[in-house]
Length: 237
Image 1: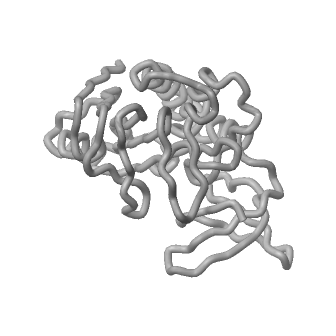
Image 2: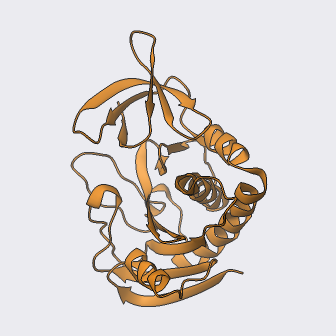
């Protein structure tokens, strides 16, 4: 069952749900949305600027013994988010997913996601630039408002939560395969040039060549070999 709680302000919706999970008080299907965050976080510890008008929300998934790998919940959230944006965006031809779970509109970052775990609970935080977008030095960003679309955070979250519940059910009942296929259908085209920043500080540039069966990013290198990315940050080259 989906339950949405809304607060005017908090430090981080992910931190709040992690605390609830640690206390055994974060049931699956719970969504926490904040109008504003004062300590929002993105991947790799980046701050997430959180002015009023955008979506800042987190949800909890309680892992079961036969579930697919917990890390693949990022793909569940990504395809649900892509679906929710398409409901509100008249022309979605420029909307693409980028590994591991970013959503790009016209090549610019529209949203971000952060997965964290506490025991058997995975907390998935999602930020979407609905009304505003930050000016970042290392990547282009955009918002739905900048593309002529006006949607309130509560309306958007209702669409997102419904889609997430549906895709979570497929992930549990059918495995990762249908989620992976939808992700590939919505990703930038095979052959797109990408630069991957590795956890050790290095980087590798290659052409997008899909995902392996477990969701690792496949890069085709200049010498014809493949590099499988299991962790790291990826930018359009």
